Image (cartoon, rainbow, N blue to C red; front, side, top):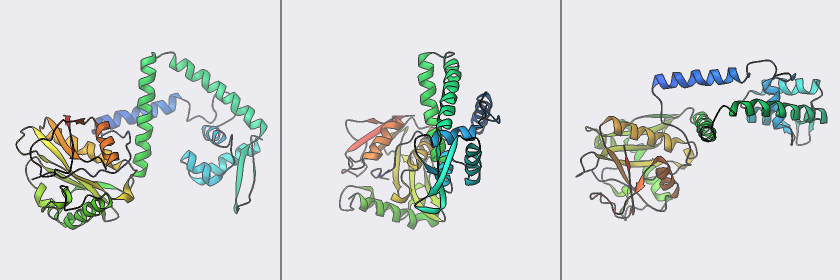
Length: 322
């Protein structure tokens, strides 16, 4: 089977591959411990009469007026919780509110001078705490910690955006739907059938049957009974130990949610489980986001393509060691 160009059009994120159950449990335990050790379960932060939720609300309304809805969205909490925190801050004289001139049903909140002073004390207190914490680590450890926490928080953000989306194995009933996605995305980027692109493959309408063979698999992304994208792994003809990442396409309505990286990581995990030593792909320069994603995943550019995929218009061959 020949391999198409990879039409992965999605933002690059720092989302990690799905962990095995024991790793997930360990990470959950560490997350709980972190919350406890930072005192985020207490009714007040240190010696200040401010709860963690109130402190976060103060940070958000320090330099700008925000509505309760905006505060709840910024803090990722429900509106009633945000409203209660702001009401308590107003009662303490740390915040003030006024009617929203653009919406009579809402009010705008901002810190008072007293609130700004209290926030300054809070920042000083937290700076002291974190200075002491970081003094236990080397410079390299601090850099690693910052990088890891950035990836972790980014993963949480993408996980929230991916709620309702399922990555599952393809079924025969999915054939026309994933073919539609591939044709739609190909047309969007000018990957026309008359050129050497995957959209011209005669097998495009029978992907379930194509990937129903040993050491091959295809996954689709589904939400609300609609297929939005997919990707597959199959052996690369003439190259034992090498598989190929194939037919990776995403509808523009689901881009920016980290699903491309998540699905790519899942395909690579499958490839390792099947004993492949390397994974190959071909793409084209017009798919800049795809190339960037593959580079971030660890794919290296090759001087020339492997085998004869039949997609001569895909001028960028890449491969990753598994």
